[in-house]
Length: 332
Ligand SMILES: Nc1ncnc2c1ncn2[C@@H]1O[C@H](COP(=O)(O)OP(=O)(O)OP(=O)(O)O)[C@@H](O)[C@H]1O
Image (cartoon, rainbow, N blue to C red; front, side, top):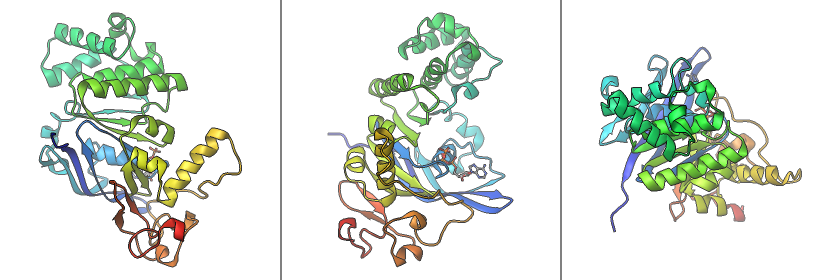
């Protein structure tokens, strides 16, 4: 059997912003890999660093206000060190990104067709009529009715769900190796959400892309991801297969997220959830960043950052309750 390769490797990535209040450590030393043809779910509360991690992969952060370090290895090169001119050939061609708000991703002044042609012309060197043929075919494949008519419409003439499908079609024109989807279903109603998720799954079966799927919604993650990484305050606190994370969440933060999900689903007021809010990236607490909100906090959690422990089955957790001389949660 062929070994599954890593298509992307993020090593010790730090993303710091220079702000008026001081240095903001939005992402602070994270490492992960994206494997061929998998969907990796990045989950966590608002502000934990999911979006900026992916903006760094897309090389879309403003270099004037950002301090970047570490490595993002793609095709044997460190994206952080590739010149912008060279990366223009990769962005939108080999690595695509679907954003939460499809309306703001399209230019309102140009038709869908003109915007699709721009991608086909730049990356595939297609003529106008070739672009039209390819784009309409792709729009049909992602389930857009009457694509010939839609192709000549402006973004405001389409519904949110239809526009999100169009965004997906636009990103698929170049058959990117990596597709980053940042909350692609959040702005959509529940039925359309399910359609878009199904669409993304069938796209992956057909095109074999690797997907990074960002969301704060665990329900969505359980539907779509093969593996899940849980982020908290600029760190990845737990990594595992979707099955492991859902059946055996180890980090108290992941457990809290799960309980909050159940609480929302069953509208119960008695199940526990996570009190407090994510701390500001200018002022993280000493030790484990989750310690002020953690029900299992010990002295060491307030002093030292926990290291990552592998507990088998590709399940890793950064928490003083495991490994590092700590006890398993059950024994605590
Ligand atoms: N350009 C910037 N300058 C300063 N701080 C920033 C900048 N962009 C993002 N941040 C900060 O970085 C942190 C991480 O933001 P990010 O958008 O990645 O979070 P997120 O987990 O994706 O949340 P959300 O789900 O709300 O998008 C936040 O505290 C945010 O305020």
